[in-house]
Each structure stands twice: as C-alpha cells, then as structure tokens.
Image 1 (spheres, rainbow, N blue to C red):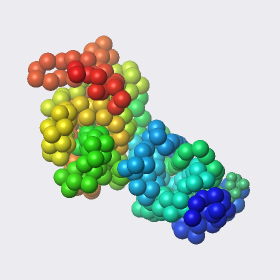
Image 2: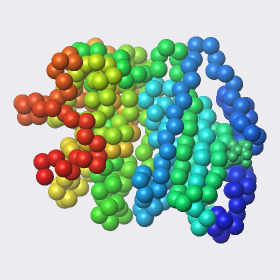
Image 3: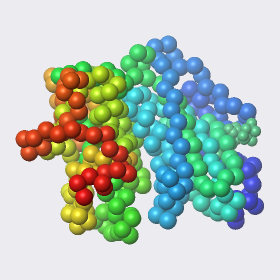
Length: 337
Ligand code: ADP
Ligand code: MG
C-alpha cells in the first residue's frame, strides 16, 4: 500500500498505537494539539535540539534501510543531548513522505525511531506528517542537564587534555564500503553499522559526569578536525592533536588499505562518527577515561591538548606540526591527491 492510500491520519494512528505512553516529564503525548511537559525540577535546565535529514542530501535510500534511517534520525539528535552532558526528556518528529512511499517503509522508519526512543527513555510526544517531493525527517529532542553545568564548547582552557570516545573514522569507512557495494561483506559489518546505526553516547556522557572534571564537550558529527577547531574558536584557545594517538579500528585500517584511503584522514575529516570529544585537566583525565570504560566498555583516548590561542590549531605527526584545518567530509578527498 502507498502512503497516498493510507493517508495522514491513518499513519498517525499507526504511530500512536506503537508509541510509548507518557512517562517522566512528558504528561501528555500524541493525540492533542500540543504535547504537555512538566517543568524540569529546580536545579535543572532544559536542552533543546533539532536536526533534519533530507533524502539525497543526508541519506541515500539505495543502501539505507528504513528502520535504520528511523533509528539514526533520533540517534543523531540524542548525540547532541549526550554532548551537552544531559538526559533526554521527550522528542517530536516531523516526517515528509511522497505519495508513492510504501506504507511498509513509513512503518519501518517509525519502528526504528521508536526502538531508539524506548532504549533511551525518550518518549515520542508528537509530530507532523506531510506529503513532500522527497523523504524528509525532522526531529526535535528536549533534554535536561544540571543547571549551569551543561557541557559547552566554549569552556576549554589551555593545559587541558583533549579526549575522545572512539574509534574515529568508522562511519566514513562504512560509507565508503556501502558506496563500493561492499556493504554486505562480514569484514566491514562494524563499519557499516557505525555509519547506518550510530549509538548516541548518552551512557558515556553520564559516566563522565559522575566521574566529574569534564571541562568542555561536543559530539563528533563532522570529523575530529572540524570539531577541535570549533572548541578552539568558541573557547578562544588553540589545540594540538597528536596524530598517532587517534584511535582507529583495525577494520577501518584494513578497508582503507584495500581502497587506497587514509584511515587517519577518515578519522580527522570523515563525518558522522557521533563519538564525543571533551577536555579535562591532566589529573582528571585518567579517572574520567576509566569511569567511561567501566560503565560502558567504550574506549577512550587522549588525543591532544588545549594550548594558547596564539598557537592556532595544529596536528603533530612524525615530530612535525602542521595546521589542522576544519575540513569536512566533502573536502577531505582533495587533500594531497
Ligand atoms: P494538528 O492539526 O494540531 O497539527 P495533527 O493532525 O497534525 O494535529 O496531529 C495530530 C496528533 O498526532 C498530534 O498530537 C501530533 O503531535 C501527532 N502526530 C502527527 N504526526 C506525527 C508523527 N509523524 N509522529 C508522531 N506524532 C504525530
Ligand atoms: Mg499537524
């Protein structure tokens, strides 16, 4: 059946039947003119984020299953809540389907979305459903963080170490595997899954908060090079990244060796890892890393340090320092080729 036959209200009924009921701060979800949310308790602040995915720009349906697209559309928003050191409260989703979109596709997409909503206690509070020339998914997430203690990009100070959850570059390597038609090969399974089904690092951020000592944080959506430049600019600081400390997976290195790519370039300039980059004083770094590893099993690496603004943003490799430019995924191929 096509969406044109099911119609907007038929679809909303399907979503409503499968969505979780009100819970936590959400007191009225799908079904009225607006959702109703309790004010966060004293001592908390609201986090509020939105991300939009457009067919042909952010995803390619030739290798993106509907269910994983639904999962990713919420996961990338939850990654922003994690990066602020917060917890999710509830989400909204606006979807545009074409008249020709299969109802099964729309159902699978919302099924994937609701799996992630359930896994991270982020109930779906409502949304909008429209007909569009291509598929669009626009997700809003509300979260909470301790008042005055949301993790910002602007609070890094010279002398702090720069740390990441990792490995980095797997998502870009997975995209390369998909584009080369290698997506079904077992060897690249973890890479493809890093690209199509990233896990928002909410538990890792919560473990870091419990450990204490995080000074600044953001998520890595556009490559480490880009994000370190963001932290440096927002914090009026500089940074040095140590190339040989960047965590790369063996799968990414193998794929890159076969495909003539640089795994380090994918880690620096590839997109959509949705890992965390954060800073902490040296005396706190080890403790935070261990807390994250113990609570989640996710690896954590020290990859550089915050320095004075005058030094700029550098990468140090083989004893030489060069500028680390905020190149994003689209541009990294041009480097040195
Ligand atoms: P309105 O006309 O007030 O915008 P709608 O008819 O668009 O209301 O939506 C009816 C209810 O269904 C609202 O609670 C809305 O939040 C919810 N809703 C609509 N589309 C979706 C969707 N894709 N996912 C979840 N809830 C939705
Ligand atoms: Mg509406």
